[in-house]
Length: 120
Image (cartoon, rainbow, N blue to C red; front, side, top):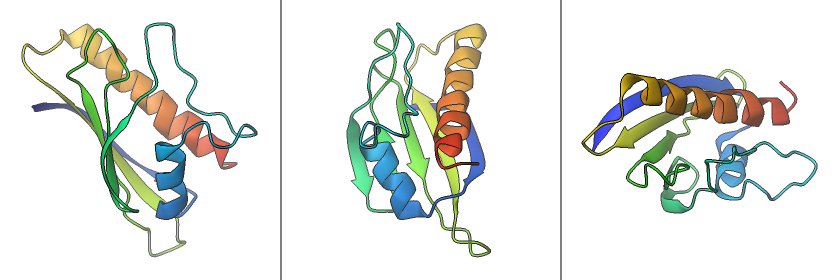
């Protein structure tokens, strides 16, 4: 697998809370954040090590080989999480436009929707 995107961004909640949100995105109906497009599907957790890391299956049926790995280190300053997602795919890799779309979607879902679901 080849890394085709990665982003690190702070999340206000501690790692165990972020871990739960990633493993059960529909758990809290008052805080929906995993809002999928028509060409996307809910991910499955394919590997995890509570509460520090986990890997999702692909969100995109057209790219079933893609996986998203999350690292969830705790920030020592305020107890939040410096969440990092990394997108992996097999060859043949998608074209640059598709890679850009996949990265943008993950950034929207994780670094906007999930983050804002905690009030920040």
